[in-house]
Length: 371
Image (cartoon, rainbow, N blue to C red):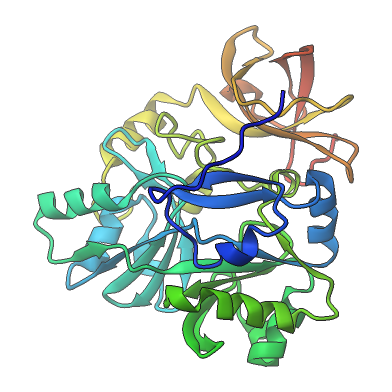
């Protein structure tokens, strides 16, 4: 049975790049009410090209929430368990936003443009109205709004070569999770050393949506001779790179401790934040499950839209496989899943209930080594 065609309606927000990015896209989805291409040639062909060359991605779906005003810093601190005081102007931080129960509301990048001005670059969940309500309820002197800013991404091992043709070789020295404000195609942009792949690259934040085509074309022209192609976040590559996906690998039902995001923060930061008491209670009680990298050898496991349950070594059924793909480079299925805490150690073997039967999955380290 063929998949239905995506209908583009006015209730879907238009990316400034879509007249270019949708050309040649074979599949697409909706992310933050914006169309996101999900494949161009095939999942595997896109994967190899991303690893070997350079791609331009329309990630206008990473919509922004701007927070500005005298209490902006205090408010950003309140949204996350991460210590924002360490974030300097010109720096980005990856951080979970938590609710009163410690659940993950979103896992954005936060860019600090000034001491009292931030962009929250979102994953796929609505945050602006939630943030506006929190700011109003706390009586903070801030403005919370959509700044109409859209990113386009350059990803792959040749990304530095491409962008240096436009901004000079100095861009090669830009550190990871840092950004600069500059001009490309006669429009102001923020260029950050970030991106949703492990192959290196940049995200370029367009502030004038009417210049989307001009910016895209300028980047494409700079990629001449570098085998630049349009691309998009790739399931195989992002799992291999250890990049979790909000809505797939974590939701509001998960907390950042079990999702493994506690490596980005420590409990007990000085500033107050939403969910502090809940997270401290969860930590004190002990975690029932933890996110793990899993290897499943043998034939490809179908990528689940439903839930593939996981049974630990004790026989307890807990958690689920959240993302899985067959890696043509490694020769086995790479996956993320929640396993019982006792099994969240390298070498543990758990059982996954798949449509083709129960399969064994081994917990592995960050290099996907089978030990």
